[in-house]
Image (tube, rainbow, N blue to C red):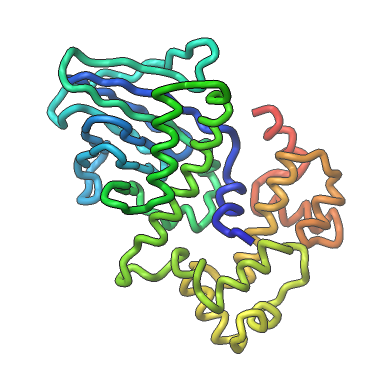
Length: 311
């Protein structure tokens, strides 16, 4: 069971929206916050990303070809040829018929920069703890042989965008979808030993990872701390301590969270009757399921489904 893919899939509420941005110095573009996670890929040239807000982790970031930036909460920010360049407000993207994504051109006649900018629609109202533990801004470089798979995805994107051909309209969105997983995989694998705790460690921990995989593979099973500890090869107490330390909540709390997440996804994406949703989420009765769901989401399952379909 690929827990990373499952966790992201549980938050996805739509296809990514992407824009090809061309800037010629001097240029500056202010991007408003988005409901989800933002990303930028530098395909050509250099630029700066200036996050809005204050704090030591929100300093301007110099970007070079092949650099990838991921903004966990879709924070507002500025892209510019230099931090001192006054930005203009971003306007709705201009979409050309048959083009795989939008285009924006800005600036004067100086050095050129080309980026792929966009955001993933993620439900930030109830973020998975794996996503909540991510840094607000992830900056990755694919130069000098680093993150080879991410580098390959960036190169493929650049090729399709520079020279669109038959199939590009389907290839580009698929690559952008894959890019999110490549970014997070690279971040997880790139963490130094001094930052080895949390979900990044849980996904590879010999005791916690099998238990997480079991819960994700079959959330409806009658799991207990004892049965999960048996999967982990630890005593009940030792497993509970280790799980809580890495995941950030006790095993049964996470089980309930994942069951409710599974139920919400089924309500959004399927026409399964409530009895079937309850059963697949680990509840023997529709009444018990509805009570638990309302406690977690603040509304009955039927109302949640109607609102999700209307959104």
